[in-house]
Image (cartoon, rainbow, N blue to C red; front, top):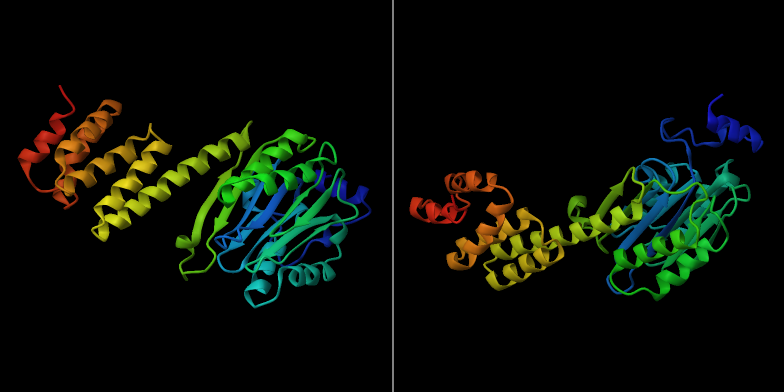
Length: 331
């Protein structure tokens, strides 16, 4: 008998507690701790999660710019994410959307879910038959929730950490996850984590609205790896901003953004290289050459790449200039 069915039978339930509108594949017991939150200063919305379950980011966190964020967990029904966002998009508040979904769910007693909308209205639910320790705390512009925890201090620790933390929304949610793990975390250990942050307003182009969309599917230290990815994403956000500044001829802004990216990830040849390319295109070759030397010392394939950029207009089509740049790689 499959493990999940054994658990459901032990709880006096059956597989029919799950919404028939959701494909059978993702229906599984994702016991975990999570946070949904809104930054009142920026309006950004986010959700972050860790679990001892493979690929928690594929099922628990849901968020849409200008709409809301959802965490659906315990004996998870992913339709809470999809349908919750749809209801909030239509104008219903997060508490109203959550209550409506619970009312229609025969398996509500084994669910745990939290929702926050773009106005900061928030609510959460912990089913009476979620595996203890389980509970949640709803605060101003956030909710923290956990089940199958080592002890009942986990979600209070998350709440305190989030309220005391500084920085942007991603940093504050990471602080909440770290506090949960420090307090004991999932009784089974840890395996995966995820973090999503979306803009306050939708541009109509979802790929532009996601500030962070990161998953650690399998790791002995998922929160450590998630923090590394958040730092890397911050750096690439700066790189993207630098590219936009170049397009608008804001050379000073571009160099500030590229410099910020390199300070976050000083070992990234990619970031240093494109910073150097931008300097060349600004006719600041002497400043670019030391950066090229650093990149070429990391990997000489960048030397091979450089002339190819001139053929597609990303560097001046000047053989002497290209020779000067590639000569920076030495013999």
